[in-house]
Image (cartoon, rainbow, N blue to C red):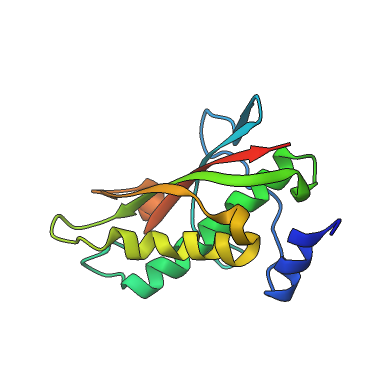
Length: 154
């Protein structure tokens, strides 16, 4: 069981990128006791960032896939916070999802499910968490979704 999470990621065909550097004046994570607070992660991979506004030019399915990318980047930051050892993870405590939405769009939870489902798919029971899924009139760089998280480690 020494590399259970890394094995599961490989089974899913997911390679964690290097933890993204902050885009402004903040740190990517803060460790307080046994909790790691990870700054908001954007839907970014080697092909770029996923932009769009829900209720206008971005579908729920595309935004849920973008939320999954946020989840991958959250795990990258967690790995950095844990000195490369994801097995230090006890559980995902809470995710906070911000969805770039028009005023009449109301399916933010379906979007953030892309990240929530990914956490459970990779981490099993350790991935079950509390969360928020809220609308935002705009997000940095025009991204469709941004997600932050709190993780308990040992």
